Image (cartoon, rainbow, N blue to C red; front, side):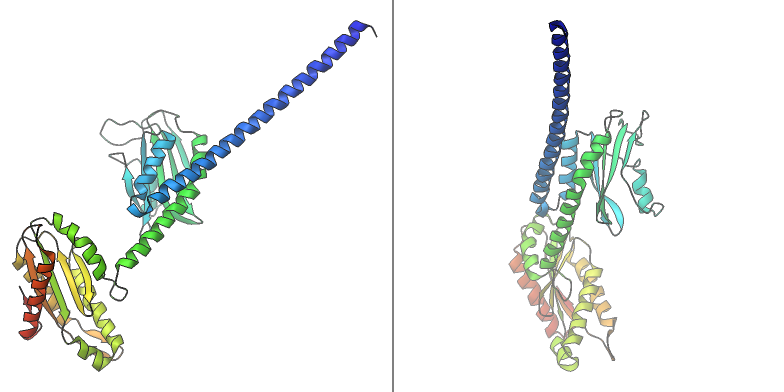
Length: 353
């Protein structure tokens, strides 16, 4: 073999090794890029978890998730639904109209039993509102914890084909973390609510009442009322029929009072058999008097049934009122308490203001 032939053979082998080395380097670079993406995704998931859990206590977890979706994905619109009473309830959205969220409506009316991830890219506008909004790309991502649906995230963009399978992969990667954060938020709120409630009656406890009342009266509308309610001869109930009967009396009276008032009113167990009520936006003390008389009469005519015992009880009620938000709460409670004792002294089963 001549020197030229040897040179050409060695050159060819060298070029082959060089191509193989370049190919190997390219493959390694691809693996590095893939690993970097996975690392970035894991870092992102950790950051999202920390961010959401940081705001667990403020009750705005849906808004927090919504902000994350807009920030991470760069979408134009984002909506967050959470499960309440087996229905998906819209918690936050930067859209004026969500009529095009057909899958949500189908799930809520029972025509769809489950939801799955879906990607829509449409040249036509999928938005159904009358305002000047265009949506051509959307992802619906249900949030499951095990087999339990916790909520749904819908992200949307005005640009056709803006969202893709890569966005689905990212959303899928973070959905489990979001699910755990939603569940943690639910458990936290449940524990928090339990700490604010009286375990026997289900009413707010005294501590909660005084923790919120001073803020409530700052925005009390036309005025507010304080009502003190006491079960007549409650000690006699316990002594005659036992403490379990007394517990039944407390629960029934509490339920009647709570169900007879508005959501914005606050009903709390003040202590023993005494209940305190804050009533919002009161224009006339006579309106409070009329309502309390109805509550008193309903309690009086509702039998207490416990085992073989059927009996009736009455309550006495004292009312005080302030026509502005700068009233002295302690003074109003004292006045309502004095009127309560006047109701007791006048023969019980009475309302005095």
